[in-house]
Length: 640
Ligand code: C2O
Ligand code: CU
Image (cartoon, rainbow, N blue to C red; front, side):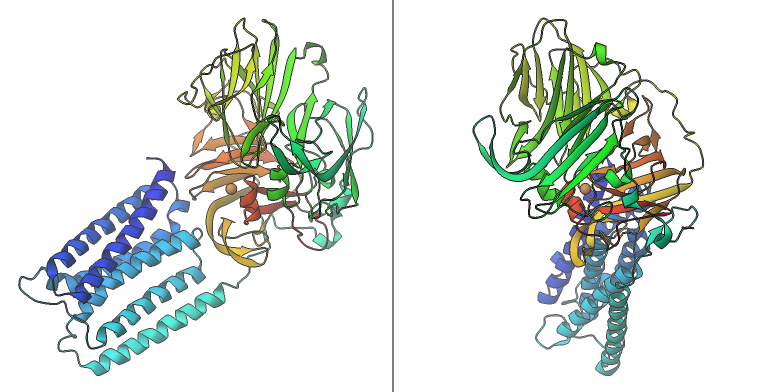
């Protein structure tokens, strides 16, 4: 079973455990009938055993998946179950005997409350367990037990009063427990306000440069001239609202660059200087341009509040950077991007290699897939694209996923190669056919093939979206999915994988209650916190940095670091066996653990976030800062 399935099953069993024991308590309190109580408690015991077994299996997948269960949920459940066995068990299995005495009934409820507390801790607290959450959980369960005892002590309940227990001591014992629970609860609440440390050095040296005296990120601007032999590519891009018709005639109330969906395609040849002036005509929330996957100087990165002020309506900003990386990229606004990108503030950026200019593919299609108002389109075409190609022609398809969820592509009618991922070439990519290609949010795949005499069809999520030379419909849904970690041939990488990393950061992704932009929310969290309360990651120029990204949640998180391509080291502890895989966005599916590494050679303050943009908005975003570089003064802004 996959770790994600185990996580889900654990949730189910936890809730079931609570329900069975609370049910047993309720029945025992309401009627003298033993059979049902015994049945429910018996099933409850089985559920407890199942829960323990699940936690043991999950522990084998990684401590991150069970920490709060092992430290709190399981001990709480074990203590309550033992108490239940002592106080209720013997009476229940003894033949004869009418209603269960009150302490026994309370004990049945107590097991239920303990199970529930453990579930709540897992579901809303998660990893890492904090004192605050632990105290609140214990206080909550304790208060529930006391309240139940109180209610059952009222005359008129079916449960017998506790035999031979004089009421005086019982009450004062309850009072004592009540005070303890209240104290624990109060301490838990108080501890919830303890602030996280501002920075995490990832096991490396702490900051040596005080921020106040560092280089301002706004000074880290790009060059103003092309490389030798390159040209300047001037563009002006204007953000404005517009109603745009898709190919079917469907009209979209969009936020656009230049009134088009997507925005204007930007192109360059390696070594050119991209010189892009962004104007904002009427986007009230403001805009920026972020060059997704392009390792620009940080001052050109377009992260509002971090690398630049947002460009307000009527404002403008000029971006300049060298087109050093050849490949398929895209640009998008980074201001309230969960709305802006979805509504259309994005476009493609394709840089072709200078030396290979002569041998460019005869048919080179840039195919950004985006969902507008719930309708999937390639470019602005929400129907089926048609493309002519001569048999024998070299074809390159550049697939881009500009949505927040993955898309599944398949190419039918020809064998092909996946030659580049996220704008970075793979080593010796082999021929593929009848494979599904799952493209993470924000990611790009470049496919190449030679046009056959017959036809070729591209499907997106099972629907035909592109026909080259006619083409019949094909069912591609059952085709196995290509695993990039085993595709292509190994090759040297610029650093030793077994090396000691200068910094190692672990990011455990989950949902939970956390502060996001100053408000409590059921957030998308990193190590239990939401933006901007997640400690920034501190690195020094030249460091070799490793990330371990763990997904404890039930959703996929496409992880994206600005300013650096990362090399995939391993998934679930297993190293890749194929081509070195350099990406800027990698899908961490439920239960997965990814290890990636990169060299910190691009000083700045870089956003590091989930590229499911609503998730980023709900807290799943932090910063990686180079020692000696300071972000924009004046705090965080709405920088996503
Ligand atoms: Cu494509 Cu921070 O984003
Ligand atoms: Cu996410």
